[in-house]
Amino acid sequence: MAKTDVLSLAILGMLAEQPLHGYQIRKRLSGELGPFRALSYGSLYPCLKRMVASGYIAADDSNSTDVTRPGGSKRSRIAYQLTDAGTDRLARELASSGASSWDDEAFDVRFSLFGKTDSETRLRILEGRRTRLAERLEDVAEGLARQRDRLDAYTAELQRHGLERVEREVEWLDKLIEDERSATRGTDHHTASAGDK
Amino acid sequence: MAKTDVLSLAILGMLAEQPLHGYQIRKRLSGELGPFRALSYGSLYPCLKRMVASGYIAADDSNSTDVTRPGGSKRSRIAYQLTDAGTDRLARELASSGASSWDDEAFDVRFSLFGKTDSETRLRILEGRRTRLAERLEDVAEGLARQRDRLDAYTAELQRHGLERVEREVEWLDKLIEDERSATRGTDHHTASAGDK
DNA sequence: TTTCCGATGTATCGCGGCGATACAACGCTC
DNA sequence: GAGCGTTGTATCGCCGCGATACATCGGAAA
Image 1 (tube, rainbow over the protein chains, first blue to last red):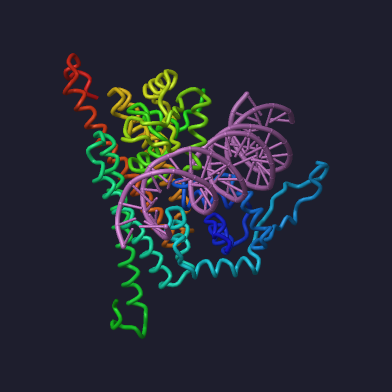
Image 2 (image 1 turned 90 degrees about the vertical axis):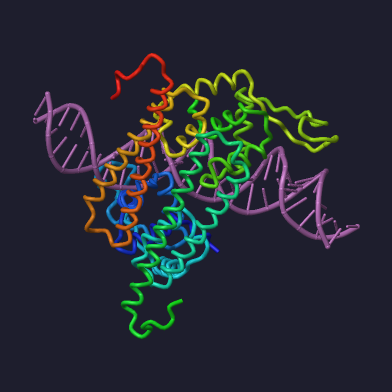
């Protein structure tokens, strides 16, 4: 079932625009999602290797000659590009909106690829994420109530702040969902106003 | 130098209150810091092993008619408790406030142990964390300005939201710092009002 | 001019975290 | 008396990360 590996999805999406080297991929990814979430070479290169082995991307090292003998070797740089299988995989991944898209790490990547998806999928992911966070909110609140007397002031404050952060996240999602809905209503020709579920 | 390993610090702090089994440790830790940050057995037990090997904690598996359980429970359960070396280590760790305390993962643990530290250390950690986040803020803003035209709407929104989240975090820290300062002024006998920077 | 520095670029190693999983005995209800 | 959720210990494989190594290039300082 190929457990969808968030990192490879991000790379797939990035290579859909244009071929890139590992170094460039890291740069862009760190710039888009991070520095909230950094990406190290220790994950990048093994992941690229895996993807090549799986046939989703192809390594184009057209300009590298003999490496062992530094006689006339140009700088070795490897451009990666999507194969047909990779394009296919990306399309399938983008159309899906399973529970793995609600995760903390996965959601950001999915969201950054919203431009390549349709409005329906966007809404499903947004709502799934919202539900996930709401569940977490309940769990925390419940657990907090059960042991609120054993906690010292600082731990309690930490809890409170964490809770607030999740609440803010939910508000953000609500806004996005609202925007997405009104945008759909605006551009959708035949639906007009009837099925406003 | 013993790279301070956040998890073991958390365990050290937890065992300072009372001896606990692995299962209880997990429960409490997940309840205090998490479910924001969960803790799996795959990290817990190896970590406990390491700490025993290092001599910071001792495993007490004398399992018959013990403190909490009425009746002779023969179930295999291992209570861990601090050794003298462990108490020492915790004290040293708590007094320190090095750069490793500003990290995302480390800060929460340090903060939850604020009750065991003095006001000076608290302030140093709070301010260090604040500085760290402010730096991050600048980095992101700069990187965002450099490539703001290449980003599609969704990625840009993700950036904006991430930035906002960090800003909120800074505001939270400012409040805490302010509280800490006024509390110090309140209880500190000889300082009075002079150096109110 | 040479020298040195920082950016570009690929790659690996060890450590440790995580999810899944297994096993086992207990207490609880039906 | 069988099932089931909780308490409890433990390991395995995968993979992410930080550190590190190595190589080439452009440009600024010496």
